[in-house]
Image (cartoon, rainbow, N blue to C red; front, side):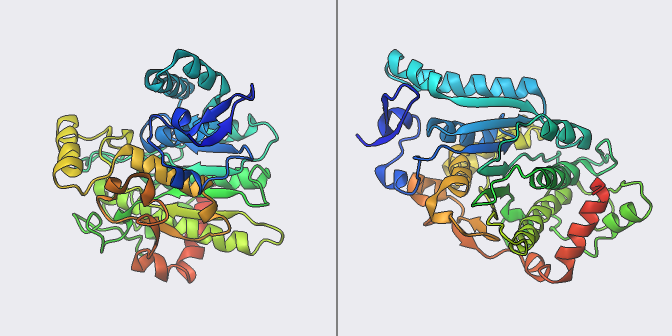
Length: 378
């Protein structure tokens, strides 16, 4: 048994007890320094990889702020975590000890509503985060033809997945709520941002073009756009575009952080892989989603488990192997879940972004950032 942590009563919490649910190996424990307890924010932590990551990191003794679209969803997430721990503990005393040691704070933050983001940040205590995980995301049914917009006129997918997080990140940094001495910002992107990837090559591919949609929305002051490139609405492409936005945002953010004197905050993005069984696909045909999930993970072995994606998020937020690294995109080949916890830092590693993302390192990334600022009113 390997001692990983202690609870508030100074009783040792062993690796087997803490990670009974996960089967974490001693080699994985070695890449985490759980001595200093951290304060971590996770958006979209009520389901999918956000929920899994919240549970993982809470079990390590860290304080987790669960920022969800509604307070009800955030409270339900905490209930899920507590139920999971109780169900997976072989001893009632151990379960009670673990539950008492958890530091989970439920909060409301609707990323499709800038005023909700404002209220969320205003309600935070004046205590910086060691890691900010910009993880929440939505994907509309790819056959949808009606354009849904946020309260400020942004196309819903890009407005939530990119602009909501962009504004939240701005407010957190402006308010000095991210630790400047080594804080981390982790952005959940996807390999579908790259037209040359297996998933990105299906259907219409991601491209922001000349940003005509954002340019028009910023110029006329309405903020209203249907697609970033100004083309006709396509729900499937809108999701892919939002993930390309995530990659451009993370890379441009790191360049700006590097230019700030005395700032050692590092920003990275990653692809959790093809994970069908999450809240991300709540707008898809549920029967098809369940069948495809089984086919992708069990038969074709190209999909990943939710637990694997949660581990990837945890790795980027906490691992000592990532310390001091920024501006990177982490990725693993399809089917890497089979390597379990040992995949992180091996199969799951820094990789190349799409050609468009690379080329944006010049003027497009800067212009994309400036337009995002104008749209959210910075």
